[in-house]
Amino acid sequence: PLDARFGLDTGADETVVTTSLFEKLAATPTRSTRRTMNGFGGAMRTSATVLRALEGRVGPLAITVRHAWVDEPRSAGIAQLDGVLGRD
Image (cartoon, rainbow, N blue to C red; front, top):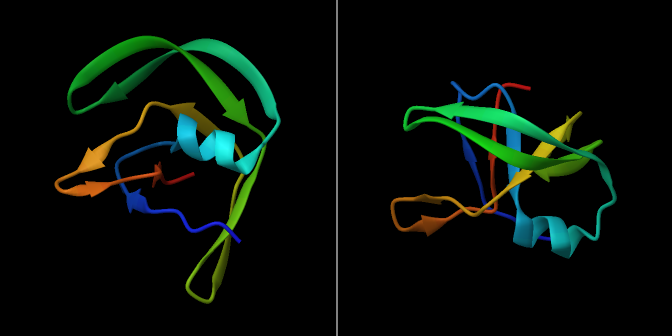
């Protein structure tokens, strides 16, 4: 098992994982694409890698994210995050 620290963003449409977590998972990407990512800081056009499925546990609950995007690390205050769970 791999421990990872995720934030929960109830306003985010999609889940994002960091490039470093993506590398630790040794996951195979589904595809890469150009896309616009929107957030409270504005919109940004970027290349993005997509993971087909991301499975894990939050305490006793099993979760599956159908499509996770790979992006650069984000921080939430003093905590360094490995990703952000969106409403997908």
